[in-house]
Length: 79
Image (cartoon, rainbow, N blue to C red; front, side, top):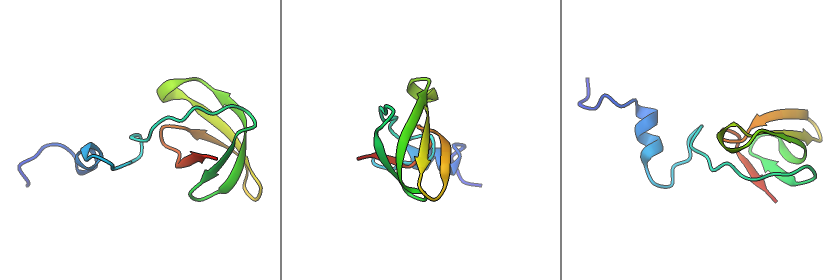
């Protein structure tokens, strides 16, 4: 057993510049915004619920339909 009791993913998330799930910047989105997702591609925001760490966006992707994405986990980039 290693000397640290901190789980590996938590140690990795503490490194500067590392974006792990739950460690992403929560971006501000509004209906109509265009975004890109690592897996789903280009999409359009149709609805946003909540704020801060609990913010969720409903995004319509051409080939994937509408996806509900928790913004602190979703690999989204606003265009």
